[in-house]
Image 1 (cartoon, rainbow, N blue to C red):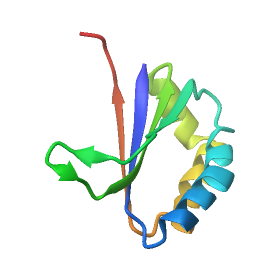
Image 2 (image 1 turned 120 degrees about the horizontal axis):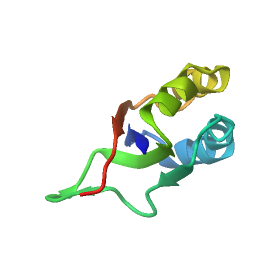
Image 3 (image 1 turned 30 degrees about the vertical axis):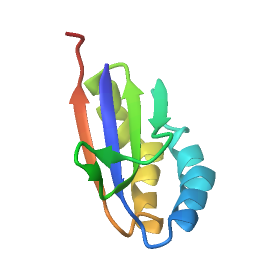
Length: 102
C-alpha cells in the first residue's frame, strides 16, 4: 500500500474551511482513480505535548506507489491539487510513502 498524507494548518475561518473541504474538495478528490481509502481525523489533531498547528489530517490510501503517482498525474489528480489554492491558504504539508506491516 501507499499513502498520501495531507496535514492542513489551522485556517483563519475553520467553519468555512470545513464547508469547502467536505462539500467541494473531498468529492473532487474521490473522483481520482485508484483511491482505496480516504480518511480524515474525527476530532482535534494534537501533538504529544498538546495542541498542534494542524486543523485537519487526511490520509488517502492507494494499492502501490505507482498507482499513487499515476493518480496524482491524472487530470482528476491535477484538478484536486489545483483546488488546494481555493481553501488551504494557511498551508498544507503533503507526504507520500509506501507502507509495510511490522
